[in-house]
Amino acid sequence: MRGLIIKDLANMLTQKRLLLIIGVLILSGLLIPGMNADFALGLISTISIIVLLTLFSLDELSNWNKYALTMGLSRKDLVLSKYIIAIIFLGVTFLLAVILGIIVGQRSPGEIITVAGLIASSTAVIISFLLPPIFYIGVQKSKLFIMIPIMIMALLGKYIPDISHVLAYLKYLPLLAVALLLISIQVSLMLIAKKEFN
Amino acid sequence: MNEYILEIKDLNKKYDGFAIKDLNLQLPYGCIMGFIGENGAGKSTTIKLILNLINSDSGEITLFGEQNFPLSKKLKENIGVVLDENSFPQDLSVNTIHKIMKNSFKNWNEIKFNNYLKRFTLPLDKKIKDLSRGMKMKLSLAIALSHQAKLLILDEATSGLDPIIRDEILDLFMEFIQDESHSILVSSHIMSDLEKISDYIAFIHSGEMVFCEEKDKLIEKYGLLKCSHEEFETIDKAYVIGQRKHSFGVEALIKKNMIKGNFQIEAAGIEDIMLYNVKEINS
Image 1 (cartoon, chains in turn purple, yellow):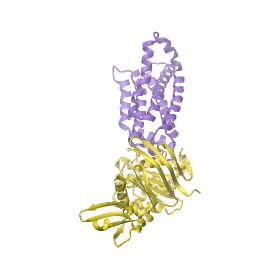
Image 2: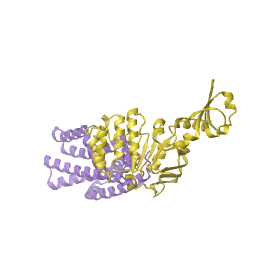
Image 3: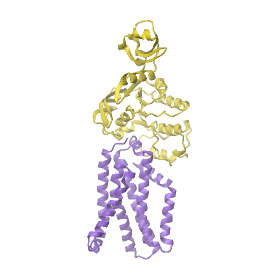
Image 4: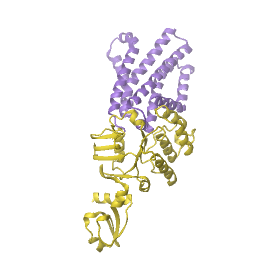
């Protein structure tokens, strides 16, 4: 499995253009007048997901998974290695959000940690919904699944009259994210077991 | 030890418009088996079934005497695979691929791999996308041969390569097979290659095994008859596998020991045997 993680990290480093765009976008949130730090914080989550999707796309382009399964690797290794990469990304998302919060300096340390935690948790929720279909039907066909958590949030906003009630429960978002990630891993393992690698 | 390194019994797999039907195959230790058949005959599907990349509907596949479902990591370590397509991430260098493999195979032999790289003049710093098809294939082979595999499975590994590279690869196969506990299953369209190296030929057509026999026995059994139309009429058609008639005579694949009389019978190549069998089945 270590080999798979090395492959993903090496693949990520080859995406220099993507990494450059990420840097520019984050800086633009901080430096361009009219933009603000919250814009940059929001971007971090989106960018983590884009980079993760790019790694899946690269595997798909080279038909890597089929070949990997002929090596000393199992289907479980394929799934777990990607979740490990996703968790690394979540950690980086959290750290970047903290660093940005410190640079901007508008919030107290407690608020910075809370905001960073919420950003990483919401990213984890989206990833949890996104990864199982990707393992089963591939990244191209799975992009629509990103809409599921967004739609859930939109529906909550529309049908719950007093949104402040929901906001009070935001502190439980990290717990929900961990639970969803664990469920997501199980579903992915179940789906990949049935998948045919043609 | 089981008699066969690979054994397939009554294998079935159904798709829309195509099926592998009651496929049987036995590959003994210390042998090279050429796996032949036209495009879409089921060679790649069979290989995917052996490697458990797809699931069979029924039947049994055993590798080293163990069932392939699920194909354990231990079994995978014993199998070197070269697929018809290059599956390495295109932007990574040969060196990074080496690191990935080193961390993926328990029995990875770094010295062996580096020796193959030198032998194939594969540059470590070159990206996969900058390698020619021949170089990529050599890299795949170097990997397949560097983790102490005992069985090599190659799907169209030599197609599209020039004769010099193909010859180098065939030499490698011959070296690999010097160890009697090793075997190779190689699917290819290049019959001349298979004729050079194979001990057994397995011929699949429309998902069904037409024959799986020793190459020497096949060549001994079949002959290519060349005669006039009148002479052909005197021959017992029960021993004619397939025929091609033209204005100046007939060419036919026959069971040569069964034909009596003074006829011009040439040795039949694997390609002739395959072509005439397909002609006969299709007609």
